Length: 517
Image 1: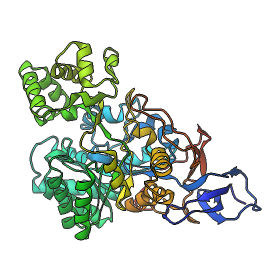
Image 2: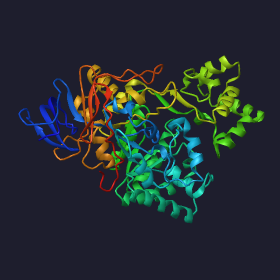
Image 3: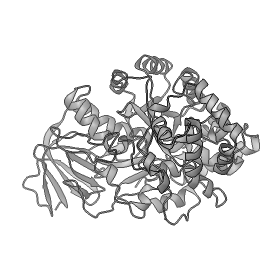
Image 4: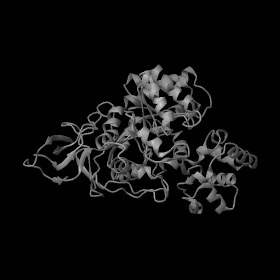
């Protein structure tokens, strides 16, 4: 007796191999059989006629670290067919963390992850995973965040680590890996990781390599200095012997393909993720010069209060030719600033009757730096994205930031957009290859045991979609619109989404690198 049979679907198993018609039988949290199961008994049957039945999508890069503690339905991702997310990205997350440092991370990350009224009752990676897995609709896999590790040992010190400090950081990474993390992430664009040197990254990645984990890096630069940033990434991969993955590899096809070809020639084990949009999303404060961002939020706010610093900021923004008209305010928390949400910085400054630098300073002061922003790119094109999407090393990741009244649409539409636009409409990818990039490519790369493929005996994380209608609906103006065409989503054997509606089931788990349940 099966608990569930999906009948008559076009099975695309995640391997990249051609699809075929068949049924999938589920018993408990596992795939029990794949084949012709029409006459087999089952407690429930779902018709999949005309639907693609494939592994649940794995989001290689997500910023929902605490979001699902407040909203365990996880609808923005479940409605896309996502059954597992890789979190702890960019070196900035919430474990390991001491009571002394938790207030910093809550405030610093409020513009990316929110700051919810939840019980902040963990310290170690293991304790954080315990909390994440208590009640959630999808699976979560965690990376030890380098910035959090450095904060615990060195605070916000702007210098290389001493040997004793490096030893302590390595111990924290070791502990996190033993408690179930799948690797280490870093964000060499954010404090305090920006202060680390290559030697520090290499030493910590040697710990990760011993545990067969992965190093996931937000490189120091993706623009004018991408060559140096990529070489640093290669150096860590080479010297530590660690599997390496580059987050949101947003660059031109000419540069990106050349760099990846060079890594392949050297036989370096490097992959990358990307999302199907020509705009990024980060904290608005990220455009500020480093001298503004140093230290705590309170210290940054205090600098922005000083008239001489505002003059310096205005001068430097002009010298750097920052395109403020391409930088949109994705959300604010204070009622007085709601009128600026959805506007670009120049529009908002004009509405406020202020010079741009003064407006930026006042907005960030009022919001305690917690302002997400959507930044439209000018240095890459759709054809650049398509060329990098076609490469074997590419894996799909949303880099989804869900907070704000005008969120980036990638958090709500990445996976259906790949299937609807780049498979059905533009035929950039074959269906089977697109599914591979969204399932096994990520699960296998991270090391998720028995997930990412439709294989008998493996976990029953399954997505069913209509290949003729699946598409994203979220836009830059309405970033949270749900997609179309995702009919059923099954997590650990339980139906979580049925015809667009959440079923009330919360079968998700905090996965651990040892055991991986």
